[in-house]
Amino acid sequence: MIGRATWIQSPKAILAFNADDGVVIRDGKICELVAAGKTPTSHYDVIFDASNHVVLPGLINTHHHFYQTLTRAFPDALNKALFPWLQTLYPLWAELEPEMLASATKLAMVELMESGCTLAADHHYLFPAGMENAIDVQVDVAKSLGMRAMFTRGSMSLGEKDGGLPPQSTVQDEKTIIDDSARLIKAHHQRGEGAMIQIALAPCSPFSVTTDIMKSSAELAKAENVRLHTHLAETLDEEDFCLKRFGMRTVDYLESVGWLHDRTWLAHGIHFDEDEIIRLGKAKVGICHCPTSNMMLGSGIARNNELEAAGALVGLGVDGSASNDGSNMIMEVRQALYIQRLRYGSANVSHFDAYRWATKGSAAVLGREDIGEIAVGKQADLALFKLDELRFSGSHDPLAALLLCGAQKADRVMIAGKWTVENGHAIGIDRQQLMAEHSAHAQRLANKLLAKK
Image (tube, rainbow, N blue to C red; front, side, top):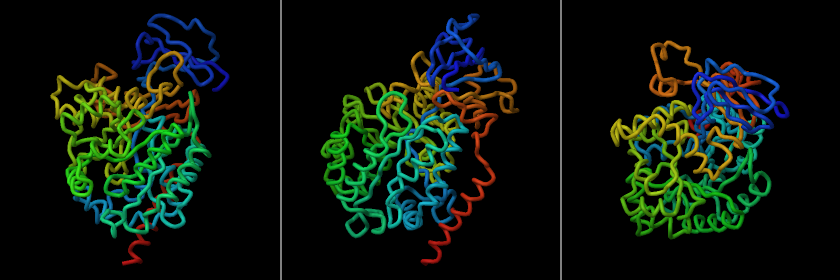
């Protein structure tokens, strides 16, 4: 579609201002919004009839762990809170191999795209022997799918013998982590408008990395002008860990290692007090709300309204597919709507709030100004949904119905002006083969752990 102009004509509904008769796409960007009853003033070559579609900006997932699609509903990890859940799964994840990661990444990204997602941030922090090029493997998958991605070079440097949670086989030293981080930025990080692949630095969590790696990652990120990411304030156990090990609460710790600024975004961000929310807002820190994961692990409910009011940036993420256990962004938007209503009341959280978190909010969390909304000059990342299932029968407001009636799949997805999903399926993907290969890798991973017991 690059080089040709397409008028996405007369949608059933569109999440945009003054675009009731659609948008015109040219060279991967939105070049015109068409008001109700109007026709484009600019040239177009193709008309796509969107009269049966609800059109959204592409949904943006700001936190995930793609490799965890291999360990969904794992029996030994069921019905546990975060720390024992992690301690159960770490030995399993330590057996990961490059081919397994490639398959997990592909399946997760296809699942995300088919749910209306156009950009996903993945937090990969497992680099046992043989997995040194894990991020390179993921970059290749993303390029083959034509999907935008923010790959965060995670790290774990505080193993069990030093008081952390991860097994020693998953821990790396500071030089190895920083050297590889610098290499990945140089090799893969794209800057500026329209970037398809970006790199961020992401020490895993306060309970799995040393203070030194937090500081050195911050220094490298500042020098290279890339973003920083970590888990923070997900559970009260984590808060207790920080108090005991560092003598300070989570946000104090964040500031002490040079992370309290506008290039940082945090996964979960549940357990902040009033003063911490004010400080996070003043610093313009990003918060990724992960509603399904937080419910599954019983971690708590993020304070989205107070965070936004203070000036923090709020986006959404599905989190790992072993604590969700899916990779479905439109369903995550619905979950965010409902759990935030549980906290604030139904009159204080609308479906437009939930859409904002998943689009413009998530874009801001990732430092992107070129995506996240349907406006002239923005990248042509769109998700088109049909309301032709039994679940939607009798609905009246299409934009509200998409969430309230429980949409699960996009009919069409466009990324950078190119269709990547048509008729509900990712283009060029043999779904049965992908699932068969992925399931085989999942079983092999489980068998490797059993063989060690």
